[in-house]
Length: 325
Image (spheres, rainbow, N blue to C red):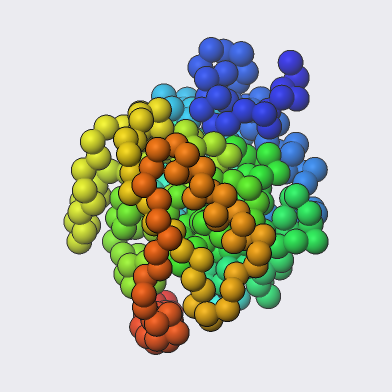
């Protein structure tokens, strides 16, 4: 088929084609690279190209994981990859090269993924948009005049553009969820330490920061968490055990859920009418599905919350930077 249909498959779908022998991992990778060459000059989603290494990996034996032969990108923040730069979007760290894979990277590889580059992120992943003096702005594939969100904006842009079906992302205060919303993807912030942080990154953003993926399908996100979301030795925190594989949860009826939603904002000003309408339509849909839905805010002073959190996070960031001087 010349693999022109590459972008119509999710990760599990591509892996199934590889498993059946309909395409090779090398052919799948070349399809991803062709789309990267076509779209990235406009998007600036990929900021480090490791295609030669990826071609060698795709041509060799790959682990027989559920994502065997699927092209994949790593966010340029945290998540060390052996021999690759890790700038964190900062000129302060522009010359950092990590010598070894981190634990999460090893789990990605064990799932069968073929890593071929790194994605754009704002400096130290701090902002909800993706632009920095070092890496430049990342564009939204639906409309390059719009932002892709942040701080996993490069991951979301590349995924929404069909360069990859899913990509590594991380989230402290919305860095998976914001770009997923901006780019029309699925983004889940996982429980703390569900995925490994590694021995040197456990205090990132005072525990707010977690790693996972952005994806075009829910099942890819679930299957990836099955591959990566198990306890890490010496982790100071233990996530609750799962009842069954997450991939099974996707098709398991959840029962009647109690769901609260709110349109409160930290400023106290109303949210955009279009956003509020979407929230209420979602609430109505959930209610029509048989769930108990109510509108209920947290009843807190958001300004005090953000002011306090800002002091703590600033101190944590200063300590983080000082350890790298």
